[in-house]
Image (cartoon, rainbow, N blue to C red; front, side, top):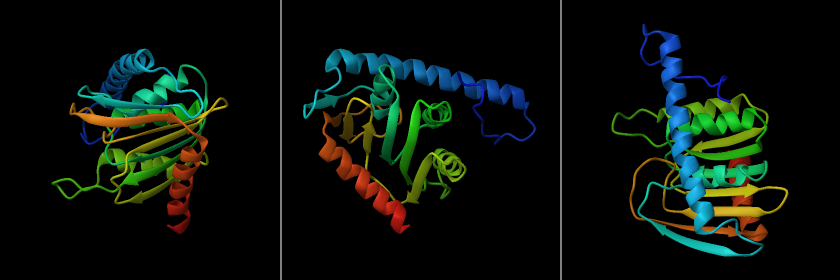
Length: 199
């Protein structure tokens, strides 16, 4: 499933094959963890019916990536709109793989140009930006962003997952709203596309 996944070579001189295997192991481990979380989401509330809304408070390591897996277990994602502040690299690589394999047909990203203490861009943000620059099915804007919204359209419905948590591994008290609502989906889709159009 992940044969085509690339890796970051920050360790010049190290065996590229070993680095690639290490990256692949991180991705597989990350997905196993999040599939468990997706199962927990399914057990907790299932997929909302039309205009149904769930509110979730959690202290666990749980985030919107679990929703992507939760929905992909049932069907393909026709459109995905993601505004995110931080995300881990294995999750970025998995999302890229889902786009390349056609499981996510179209994706739009509002990517944070967050700078950490080193004043360098986050590697995950550069990776996702570079992928979008070279993929016709993906759009992005690289901007100072703190929003955390995932909006997904499938053949069956329009799902929105909003909340305080990033797509990273920190376990804090976080709050989320998970709903099926076309108007809310369109609202988030439109502001993200407007940002991209206006550059």
